[in-house]
Length: 303
Image (cartoon, rainbow, N blue to C red; front, side, top):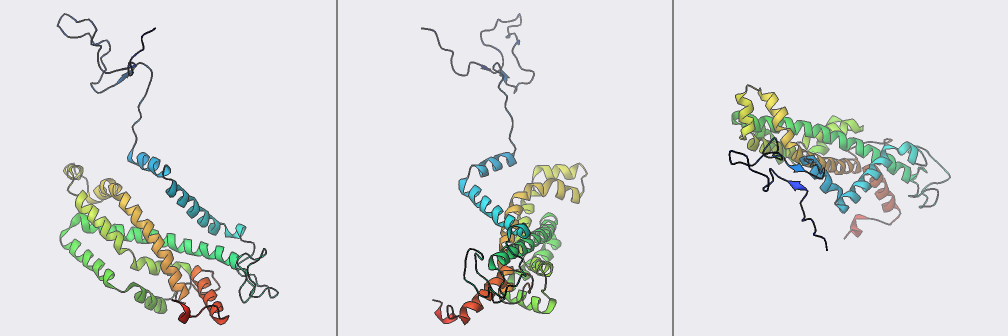
């Protein structure tokens, strides 16, 4: 019966305890690493350091529910982005021979009063909503990051002024203000609606960035950057914003979803995107009117 080699025998840290001793009484460093923390591997094993992004990516890819949600989200957005190729009809095609048809093999979601295919208009509406949401997410993130970063980094009277402005926007009744602004400022296209929404929903991102900057400006590396002569702009963009990117991305994601809901609400109430541009809120509003006329829905029947 042969002796087994003990586990971990291929890994040596520093010199061999059984190695001969030199004249000075210390071990001969034939296996001593160049650096005290260097590991010597007899089997050729190498270690690779992982960054925080690598750990986060690996954890995300192992989460089944997160991956399934990502696939569904990408599929919906891709169907809207490539609506010209996916939709069986154009959103403006009128067919007088197929007015108010129920769902069928030729029209999966049925047709409206003008014979337009609901499925095709839904796909084009997804593209419109995605365009508005992404534009709102980008603009509100940039605006909120700039305002929150300035307030959190400088503090003092800039912080008081910027945060009081932020509190003012937070106290406004959002839906009522959006309806009033859309009525007087115009709301015909997706770009106008996106600018209107971004002007009012940047406040949560600003408060999150401010809180992060208040904590980061006391860190040692920020003090070291100031001592080395780095300017305020360089410190903010080179050292502080990269360490705040996690909360910023989470807030931007939530803002994008909020923008889709608000755009749909405005279009549903007739204050958002106007026809003939397809939008999800417009489609829901037209379907409600059609159902109420047919006797299938009325406000009194909603429990």
